[in-house]
Length: 145
Length: 360
Image (cartoon, rainbow over the protein chains, first blue to last red):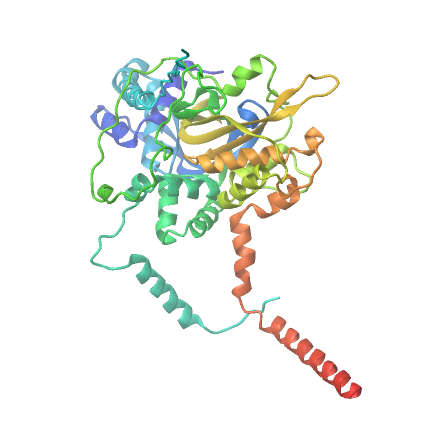
């Protein structure tokens, strides 16, 4: 069953630049004790596309993925996954995911929302850069008579 | 056949040390860092990722550095690296319809809903060498307020009117072929062909695509749409029981619209070729879509008359790591083979001399 808020948090954490995430996490106190259950480790995920964009799936190529699972002192288990080989980032995501099950409001307010805002800001800039290269066609009217 | 030979250990060790020296070059020139390659040679990095079939910018940059900029060698290094990692699984198919678009052009519709965006393109540059870029910082890009609406795929626009061949039914239970897991067995389904083409050599696919335009398996193509941008990669996390984003990757998609096909039951429709490649790789995506369409010849009841339509020919030769392996193995010791050839030619010459003498 999808937990949309947990999914949103994990989506934001995976997309967030490692440096911004590290800074957010650095500022967060107190940090819970945690135990590693699995990883952090790096492996591959085969990325799929669809023929024609919306047709039958095919295997496009692989991507490196790092993941970690942890248990924090209060017992919650968290999972972290992200593209790339940054073990520290995977572990921090897992700890935040675990912590969020205990105190979602604080984690969302202090970590997820600011990172989501940062991502949205970067996306807006990128969109506006692309929009500036949009072609405004105008038709030359032929001067008959 | 080539034989195992002993000896040459010292020569090999010294050759590799010499390679490292030449790779580094003049020590008074600062050494390249990986972030410089990632940021400033981005399209070389994209090619190494695409044909290396592994999305990881920093690894591709390392491969390019280690290969002294030889991209096929870099691709080989990337392919070798991927065999050292475990496979966690398969992603959900990426949705290019929700792409964060950096570039989007269509040769079929001028007034496309959401517009045509040129993005960071070489098109319309004058192709004059510009010494002023050396060591200079670039100006910041111009900004313009953007549409909030997600740009639809052009093929979806035409598809609504029934003019375009649809994407096709998808059976969720049908297994998806994976050439990294099982050897190719011809004839192939389109999923395996697309996988092979996506990692295929850009130069080979470019030449084959070009050949179809010049009449060898002609399909009369138009670029319906090229779009470049970032998409989310969603992965089903078993422990959670639902899919989350692993992050984003940049891809290039090309929808090539080709001439019609109809039947007694279906009125004529445009047919399509599809290209999808890691990174910003427009030439490759376009070539892939031309070759994909050419390889669908049998599906449309077309005669297979040209190399680009011949699946076994195209897919067996599109991989530049395999091709390099077989071509370059020719430089390994073949002393025994060649000795046999020498014996043979000496015997043939002796017989030839015998015939000559008998005739005199």
